[in-house]
Length: 233
Image (cartoon, rainbow, N blue to C red; front, side, top):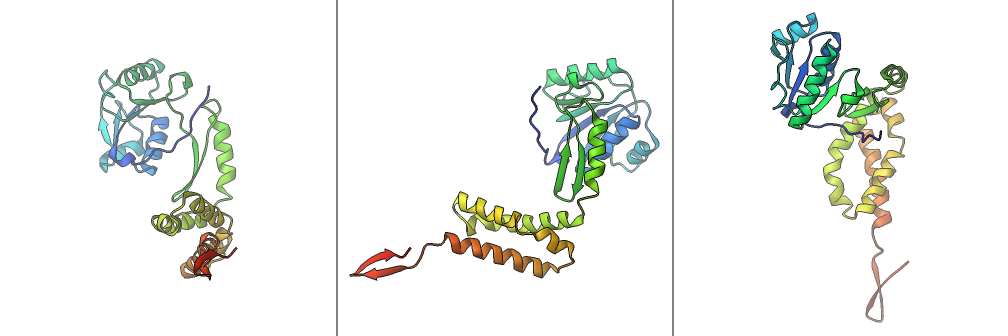
């Protein structure tokens, strides 16, 4: 089965329903909160201590009852994490009919999407998936990668977030703009940040790289030849 990996954005605006209140549901809810989700409804007669605390803090909404048909129809996305596979499949069937994205824990055949193992450093994200077939392998790889990527990656992405709105003006041509981004990606900015360089020093390096790229794309000034303008090559 072919898949199309994506990263969902603006989850804070979307209703997400989680059916189930056990350890797996807790893991899913914590991941959703990390991703910025703010409208999470958990449907379950019981909750783990951690989920109960989140409900008491009003960070999630708790429907203290079993799932019933109609619970997920208005959601953007739902996660079926109940202990009973029959309930999870009923959730999946309703979600499909309502065109709601659904993930069914430990049942890939009923999933519209799979949760991946994630290494996250601010806006820098590495996502590792196995098509839902071997989450333990993805978790092991995540643990290995987690040691190799520090806060300097988050710092770099924050700088690029500030820079991006200006790039179209600096490089109106799309190909030139891509070349400038590639130059930044290969400029060893990560070691510079990791070394403890100041923000000003890093910005100076970024501006130097962009200036070099701009000079490569700016045409030569025209010279005069018998009254006609010609460009030197």
